[in-house]
Image (cartoon, rainbow, N blue to C red; front, side, top):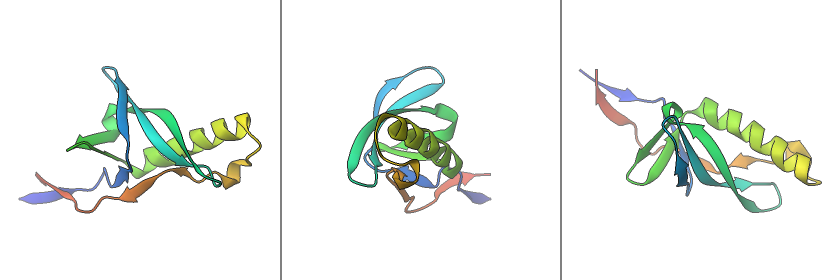
Length: 101
C-alpha cells in the first residue's frame, strides 16, 4: 500500500545549508520583515526538515515556531513591531512524496 508523506508540507523558499551537526542544520533563509526581505541564519532540527534535490522542506509547526523566534529577534534589534514581521519565506509543497507503508 502506498501512502503520502504530508509532514514536510512547506518548502523554505531559496534556503541553503550553511552548517550541519549531527542533530541540526543551519539554513540561510529569506525573511519578509514587512518592509523588505532580509537574510537570516536559522537552526532547524534535522528531524523537522527534509532536503530533496537541493530544496528544503519542513513541517508547518516548526516554521511557525521559527517565525516567532525570528520576529522576536528582528523586533528586539530594530524599530519594527513584532506584528509587522511576516516570517520565513515559504510555499506549500507542490506534490506529496509517495512512501511505502
